[in-house]
Image (spheres, one colour):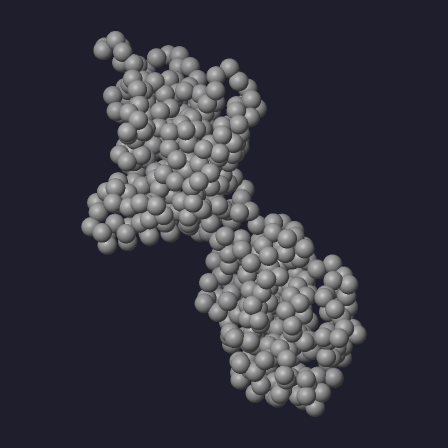
Length: 519
């Protein structure tokens, strides 16, 4: 049934009564486009997506087929994460992960379009035929379970960008080897979506008239259509979808997929990492410095590096270097959003990497726990102490990397050393001195002059819980409407490294700074 020299994804049986025979229902990755699986609830749509994924994993190496899932139903795709071919399965409440997954796939589409154009290829099959090893792109399948659930949860997210991205992948993806398999109700076969895929499978529909939307005659459809039984849009061929395993409950099928995943992982153990699917890691809701260090080796820093937290598209360590890069970092947010937590994490990482500290903390702050530490050159708790006479010997002519940290910096706008700092900060690059301040977004972002204005000019910082579109000005970045007014976990914010692009970041919590800083 399957040509071993041209493997297919076999996931059902088609009945051809006029010819008195049956034939397999299969997808050939080199030839197929996209597929809609349409029907009422509990008719077999999710099972179809699962069967396609399992059949693809059995027929192809992990290097040749990569699978991603967006589960907007009841979690039926989650067991697929056991397969080595599956990069990630994300759910509709994981808006950030859905966004990052679609952005990564869209980025991969752009990369492949450039490769096709540069080599004069018309499609991915031609490109794959002339490439080997790490240079041979995989076929990608994106399984989206419940288009109606996707719209209900994510239609307005990021100003409609996620829906637009799915539609873009449907329009442009097939020739580049990116195949969308969507399940859903009649919303898939009406309006703009109906025109973006020619291949459709219709399960039992609530309204018989809806069969006309995929080219089927409602009068010719059976009165009773069993679960797992579908009809193809091209000719109304009756099809029985194959189950992952027959006679098993949902839990038993999940266990079967896990066992299969373990076997396929052993089979494909030799596949190189670059030829494996992308992983879309989940941002931790809470993070300690120890957890980050254990998993991501964040203590392996080059001279001058300061570990800030985990973030970006790949949930990787985000660092700044205030000695070789921009010498300032602004941390802004409303009260209890994580500003002081971030400042403590900066202090912890900086001291572990050889910085001396000059600390200003006019209110109670975790930084006051550093009193008496050998690397703390001064701990100033009164705004009146921040004078040029006091700060000049601490921040000029230094022989060791030195970091000036100020918590509640909005209370330090009018210090005596203001004019002196205004002249020092713009010329701090390369001087062994860096500056990090934390304060209330509204207050720290005010004014057109002053030392805090100089801090903002490098457009590098962390912004917590923005309440208006203009809050992004504090770190020199433009916010999206979906970024504003969101109640994020403490320590979750947006990082801007000077390029105008915001990355989501989770700052680690340092418990009892006085005990945990290396001495």
